[in-house]
Amino acid sequence: MQKLVEEIQKLKKERNAVIVAHNYQLPEVQDIADFRGDSLELSRMAAKSHAKVIVFCGVYFMAETASILSPDKTVIMPDTAAGCPLANMITAEDLRELKSRHPKAVSVGYVNTSAEVKAELDYCCTSSNAVKVISSLKDAEEIIFIPDKYLADYASKKTGRRLISWDGYCPTHVKILPEDIIRSIRLHPKAKVIAHPECASEVASLADEVLSTGKTCEFVKKSEAKEFIIATEVGLVYRLHKDNPDKKFYPASELAVCPNMKRTNLEKILWALEEMKNEVRVSDEIRKKAKKSIDAMMSIG
Ligand code: SF4
Image 1 (cartoon, rainbow, N blue to C red):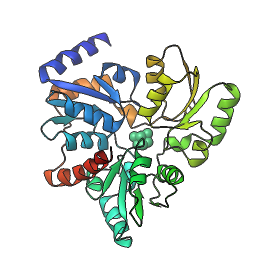
Image 2 (image 1 turned 45 degrees about the vertical axis):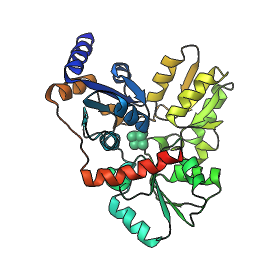
Image 3 (image 1 turned 120 degrees about the vertical axis):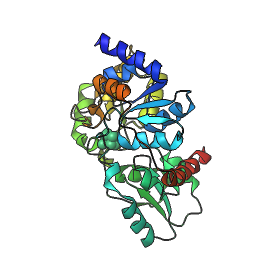
Image 4 (image 1 turned 60 degrees about the horizontal axis):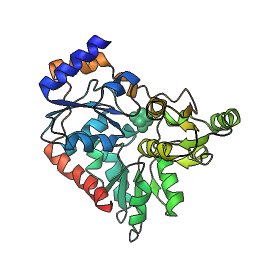
């Protein structure tokens, strides 16, 4: 493996590339990355870097988001078949149809959407700022929120706003069941329970904190607690262990593994850099419209 790592590092320099890896990637992929984080955080960090090439180790919509924010850079993916089933649950056509049924509604969409869907949105949001974005829409008569029904439910409870949601969900997060949390608490009674807002509402309601992956990393670092039950994709536990060696982490369910996130490995990173293949580029027309929804979110702060 060391030889592979060295070859990637050498080629990365030659290509003037930056490697970014989502918190759910395999440990060896996280280890070779220049930046680790959640999807928007990675795209923003890559955009700020001086690199000409972004190697995006994540899923397709994330590489598209990087392309939207960095049109002058070449974005490549080690494996373009790594999609996000949640993002694929709504198309631009679906959203246009939903908007036509609610012509007065402001449309808000989770970053887990295709570039074409983002191009139809008024506001993009992440799992960490969804509540803030909804709270800011005080004058909106109606609010559409797509595609994750559990994030919509969480944001609706937090803001007291009724949201017109879509029947989308993350197939990995719904594998975490309320009984997994109850069993984990029984085994680790002192541990704090942190759930991702993509978890089913019954799971989120059992958690001490409902946080995005980025906010989970921040929370754990500052917390006085020494043990944590982590209800999200298991890959995050690797990063938490690494950043907090004196604390203990227990995945709420070993079944919460996103097969798409695990498609990327070191060999595929090397091949992508060697051949400069698997470029992800969003057309100018879609990029400009999609960026407006991201800028609208940023303007909320
Ligand atoms: Fe999509 Fe869920 Fe996998 Fe994240 S964990 S990439 S939301 S399927």
